[in-house]
Length: 282
Image 1 (cartoon, rainbow, N blue to C red):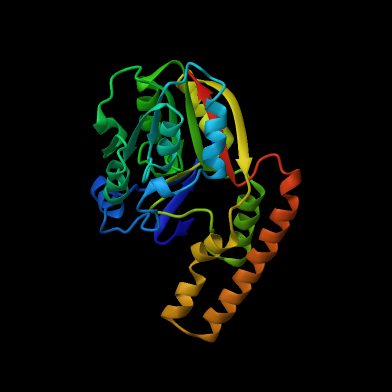
Image 2: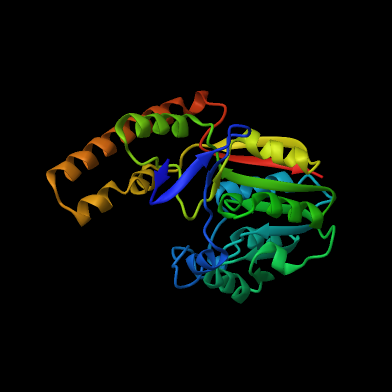
């Protein structure tokens, strides 16, 4: 499968969908720089925001664990989660490759390293809780990222992964639409997302790192707008306003709207949904 001129493949062993060849480190550095305009929608001041549902759930998990004192948020963006955790008395740290959002967190008094996790050179067994929220799918080396998290995690500490779930109804249904009608597959978004997995994919990796699976939870697809945008049908029509492109856009949007409606109606019955959170313990 090819999307946005990026070849994508699926591993028959673990189910991971990945981009190959991978973009260079220099390409990704520019992509996530100020020039790349990634996360330009983020708030310029974290002190004026409130915890989202997902952040609150992380905090609710941490609260009954008195041994969790030192928290690291990898890919912390402008530092919303660690800001809320700091308010609750935790010792918080962050790592963020995007200079613009990292500077927002730093201006708000948060200890955020601008760069990649391995570049921060934290000492062994430094943290009780490490969060990877919407991060692992962006990494050129998920295995290496995971291994570095394990190295700096204290014995008994927790690693939390939040990432899209490619074993959900939405991903499977839209893949069939893609194959039947030759539409772009919206759940994949290269070159930003390089690896797309399932619950089993990341459990296999965690097991190789000798981590113990503890729990998981799921969230429904947050909205149809992003999925329609990922089809690039409107972009194609704007570039060439033809009857064929107009019909293709209308047909694709209609199909996706129907599937999205079905997905929402089935949400109470689905055990595994669009976004998943997996928690492992060392």
